[in-house]
Image (cartoon, rainbow, N blue to C red; front, side, top):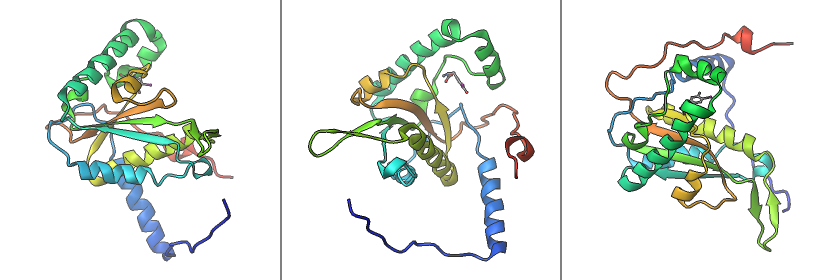
Length: 222
Ligand code: IYR
């Protein structure tokens, strides 16, 4: 494709405003917590659509946008029950057999176990798939460069968008996740990446009292 350019839509702010916005955004993001206890309160589909549109603005390798999002409402109770049953079957294996003790020890401060009631309770689940290869008009295969990195960035945007809108999320990683292709009708050429649980927190929801590493532990300036 030929290179076509258009003007960048960017407004240069004065530095005091840049500083204030950087701080305000950090403070807002710092209030984001992974929540495991969801209310059964509804969230309109339009909000989920808007958050997925935000995720779709993420940068991606060669702008190939190697992602697919499947949003599952509570309308199909049977599907929700199947998703929960499949995830819990894998998770029960994980927690009782597959996980090495060191992994279980690492998870202990989070208080997780194989029970996943939020898969039925929360108003929305968003399953995110990586598409490692696309198909060209002539049927040939197109490699999606940095597909996993791109989808990771898009998921960051999605989580930030939902948090910014006033909702809470849980990044759930049932392992293995192959059942998502089958239950959600996605081809095997798409790889499940994660299952994002979306909604409002239950009344009185609590979260683990954990801390984030300070800047000097996560960054160096040279
Ligand atoms: N997939 C399991 C286990 C789990 C793994 C990690 I790494 C976590 O940060 C949290 C949970 C589960 O979802 O419970």
